[in-house]
Length: 239
Ligand code: ATP
Image 1 (cartoon, protein in one colour):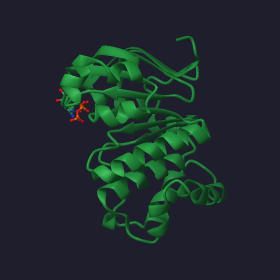
Image 2 (image 1 turned 45 degrees about the horizontal axis):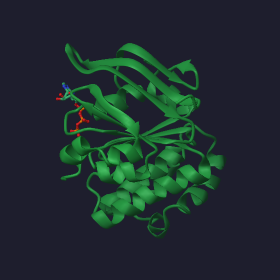
Image 3 (image 1 turned 60 degrees about the horizontal axis):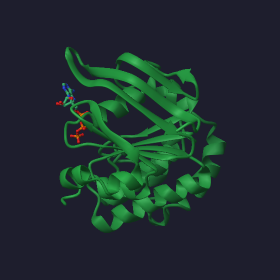
């Protein structure tokens, strides 16, 4: 596609010491789109997220965000440039209240601005609003995922990257979370990159999808085409 890509990754390699986990991954995330990266356990999804968010060194390839290189830019600088990362396993501060977790999400921004944004972001997550004073550790897995997403939004990103948002979330809340992600994209014109093992739920809201296996892209296309793909059905959709 020729639509302007907010993020474009070309030939990305990264790994752990001498172990290479990504062998030249290329993908494009158009402005205001939802792109999902599917893959089984160990395919390299988390490695990709961490390399893109400045948490893991990039050993090769080109990473462009809004036309500028982001390879090996420190994580905090990337947050300031508009890239927020919702890590796998959510990583909320269990001892802190929901509100304080949200405040921390805006650490790169003026405090007064963040306070105003908290109410706006909570409109997307009524359950969190009810539990604003509770300690984050007392929330269910799904509620903690909502908190992690809301915290990411408080960085006011242009690109929100999510690492397996369905993990550890009860089925009924999974749908709610993914529908909310779609609503956020629609209303805020935010760009989303989601890595997932749950292909069904991710392809349902995505525009484009990629499949990675052992650190390589093995398939890509419009989400609607991947949903109907026999290989994907067999590998990821239990069909
Ligand atoms: P999961 O669904 O389990 O999160 P994933 O697709 O995110 O899987 P990665 O965690 O990115 O996969 O792992 C990709 C490869 O890198 C795997 O072979 C894994 O064993 C290896 N790997 C991951 N973390 C490390 C590490 N800290 N040290 C060495 N190898 C690692």
